[in-house]
Length: 239
Image (cartoon, rainbow, N blue to C red; front, side, top):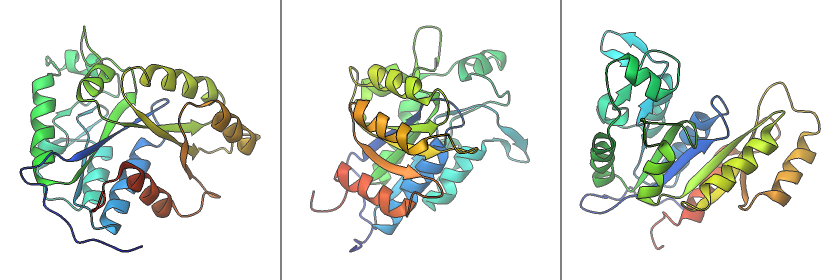
């Protein structure tokens, strides 16, 4: 695959992909970091963005989230941490509850401002969501509201375990009326799901968007699969 040199997005609007999952702990960060690595392989100037995170640990420089740090490493970016993860909370609970406990509010204007800063200097921004699609960010708004207002395409990570079919179909049903569901990725979680291949085939038949990748021991090259996801977004030069 031919590589292009990194292009400056300064003064332009970056392509953006929002990565959500059927639940927490289904592999959103693994897939998001893989997308960033694939972008670097293609010579695309890309950056990860984890707007809201809970379950953070306090260090010498303040609260830090493992997922956000993984995105920073995958991006190879020198952006300051607070730009990549503007809202970091210590309790491993729903973000709006963690914010309330910390005496804070998650504000749209802050999320938007940090996003714009990243979009001005990159060709591609991979936004990794918190938890699942409909997680509340405040009393009267949700993560889904924020993404839908921007109109970003969504990649759904499906954690392949018991119950995933219902979770995947309900998530897709909720996403599609509000923004574009680009596709979904099957993440093979341990322990291996019984009849895994049958479950993936069943989801392929029922999901209203294509299977774009399969992550796991038998999945083949993750980078190659995720390069194909980026090409589907038409983020390469000459689009």
